Image 1 (cartoon, rainbow, N blue to C red):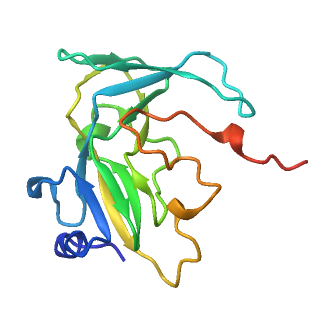
Image 2: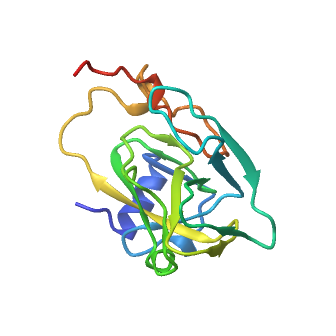
Image 3: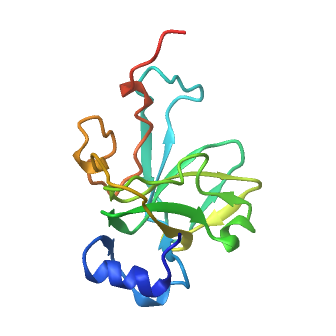
Length: 181
């Protein structure tokens, strides 16, 4: 079940959902619009390796915008910091973003109950497109959880994305245990 606009507001009022900054005009019928933060990042190496720490270079989007190029993965970040203590948040692209040929995530659209941070975006594009800091980039949808949660994401010792950041965060895959085939 997806939360309606009224339920999202109720959950914000009782503290189980936090969105900072929050503006009522960005609340949709059953979602909340999030905006592109002012920083992007690109990996320093063209070939990435899942077993090592692939470092990124951060840069600020200039006032005149930045042209994304196909064939490059950009990491972006939402302006909004969020906390979700009782619901599963999903980040989806806005249709207007998709109609510009912009994908905002490759696979990581679902958050965990207990996720407290800005959202790192995995941005790619179908053709060159100019983007701007502050533009609407996606929408958060909240799902009801069935059953009790054993451990919230922000309480897990293995959680790799708990450090609050206004910068896009690179993959932490290298911190995982790899199973032997």
